[in-house]
Image 1 (cartoon, rainbow, N blue to C red):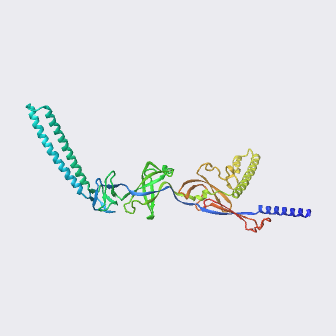
Image 2 (tube, helix red, strand yellow):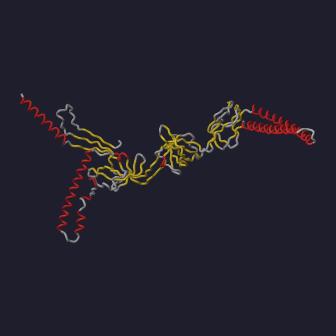
Image 3 (tube, rainbow, N blue to C red):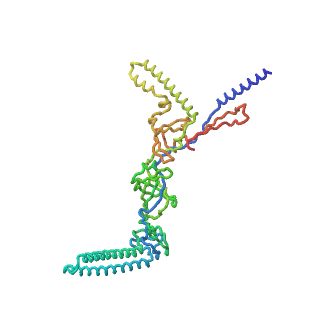
Length: 448
């Protein structure tokens, strides 16, 4: 019985060894996803949103209270400076003017009387027929009458001015953007004047107030070009220029933004105040450069890919060392002969002209290796071998990035993702109930 159990255990162990050995020998294939290197123009921009408005707007209000009697303009009506646009009922205001006029006449009569009384007492004082006290009293009454006369004149002028405020004029040339009152409506001018109309000076010249994040505000400066789109004309791209970067910041939800003012030409009248604009500030541009989708720059190779390159570079290193030993032997045998130095230099180059840099990777350190703009691009050459190309990155538009490298060509296929397929060749785990001999798939990509 014990012998039978031992035989079964030995067979099980043997089966396991065979299964693991065959699994280790399983073939592994790579399925790559490629992106293409293209040549073209690239722009680096800062994107944000803002609201379109008139460069100059005036809120027309009223300084007097009353009932709106007449309105002469409506929405979108053009107006000229000094044009009458509304009137307030003048019944009470006219009564106040008449009352002020009556007070003025009263004050004038009082002044005339006090002036005559003063002259009379002054003449008697010169003849010593009255006292100095009476003279001073007459002088006091005359001064009060004169002050009352000036007050009455001021009151009349004020009431006449209020009566004039009942007629509302346009302060500028422009277009009526808002009308906030109707005829018969009562307006009350208390602490703040109510807004009756909003007039835009010139809709042929507009501005966009754009909120730019503090991380990008350093890239914006006056005179910088900007382009924008609006939802009403999604296929049209409009142009503008930065006029001002305002110093005042705005904090909302712990996000700090600054207001950038962009001037816009609206001579065709397509843009309207209040539209939301998606603005791109042009930071940098490059023409006729190689560029690649950012997925290729985010790609990270699998361990199998790294192992393939390590084996290839190890073979290249051994070949170079062997070639170097042969060259040294030839140099020792040919010492003293002309041209020996040139032969040694020629013999030191690796086979096939391959240049192997530090770390065992070709071209390592070609651009410094530690620069933040250094990139390693993975591709498959014409023979189907996995290769890498060193490059420098330039500007980016968020989806594609400029690349610079001596091995970069137009139309080059760069690896952006990989799916590793491990085929078990029909061998199965003898201890597994899952009869799946189709293989295992491991996928790694760069942004897909």
